[in-house]
Length: 343
Image (cartoon, rainbow, N blue to C red; front, side, top):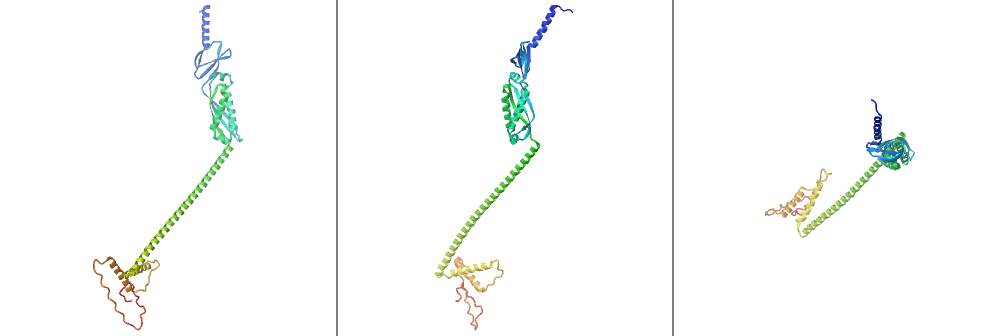
């Protein structure tokens, strides 16, 4: 089929309109920003969605990703303040806040951020000792974040986080640190044991001191009580002796008999209960013992009475022994407890 001149013009116009539409309509995805250049000069930034530009006059300059991105920092050697060589690697998180600045203020944005982060890692970690470097990782991260974020602000970039992933000292240095840690812990254990032994000795000494004080107080109290008991006993003995003396002075013979019989029986009891005495030989007569018991019984009857019965008659007077030419070898001892015995 042959096309006339008018048909060709229409077809050309339709194709031109389609080309104009494709050149003037731009769709920006979410999370991206497009910069628009007019004859090579930045004019504006397209937001996500459907946008119109002037065809053949304006064009898209840079397509910037404004989502938060991760940048891996490779492992690098760092010399610390005390001349220890360590290997460290890190990770950085950044976000484009101004697409125009990120596109036109710096070339090769990710490479620039990477080199800036590596340089500041060497600067920050090189100003610290090894022990401080290994124990203050959070402080290192804070310093790196502050320094790097301040450096990339003119680029329209926000560094949200910088984290040190791993710090690896040399193997010989790790062994030396392990030995140092072991020695420090052994030292600490010895110090704790010495303090424990000292505290135990102090506590034992305090206990012995308190025990001695309490024992001395107990002995003093016992001595005071014994002295008081002896004083009371002596007073009672003196009072009893005084009463017996008054009774004797008044002519009561039974009082002296009671007093002598009591002392006599106490002496017999002490002799009989002695632990080192198995056999007791006593040069005394049975009549003397019986008369002593009789005297004690008479005293008891006088004291307690005999239920209204008169006292029994005194025992008959013994007959006098015949006079011999030779005196007896062992004359009978006078009985102080028998009032009827002839003196």
